[in-house]
Image 1 (tube, helix red, strand yellow):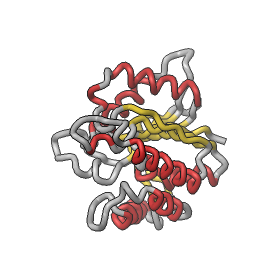
Image 2: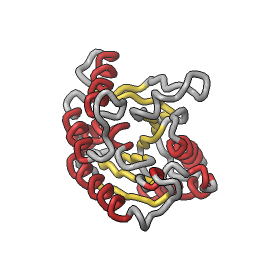
Image 3: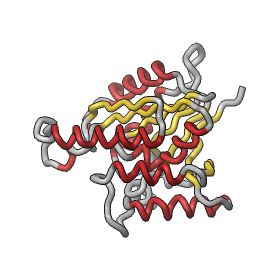
Image 4: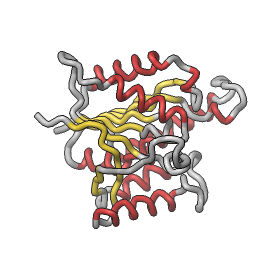
Length: 230
């Protein structure tokens, strides 16, 4: 059994990025824990106002719970970093939060965001994960770091503005893609109508294309950050 940790920015990122892989780990008997650092919703207002958005935040939290009941995650934890404003937080504070999470769950594998995404929260979390998972002697050793793509963020980055997402790690999710699609329906408030990149149809098309790249029905693609074999 592997212990798997998913560290995502916003509710729905974890399903968009690796929902079918989460379901596959669960199916294989692995223990999957999911931590979502930023709150969601409040960036849609000019000023952050959690009180004004209490009902929407509660509804989004309930949607996340439903999604992970579908996927079978062992636990889901929602933190309250500011939505799309994580560049306003001291980077060390984000690193410390991620270090605490890694110490708590002691995962073998971590899935998180790609450094080149348009979304600033994704980039800050990527940096924090890399920093928190330094292979320091005497610390818990995370054996594998994998970074996922997010429809409507990864592909919207301009060439030359940041490192491109060029996957070198693919996971066959032919048998669990249906779980990902079902989990995304729980996030109906976050999904958009086709042909938006963050639509149910677009997500399925991407999964089918990633599968075709490796000759299977469906896949999720990642960039391998580090793999340590013992």
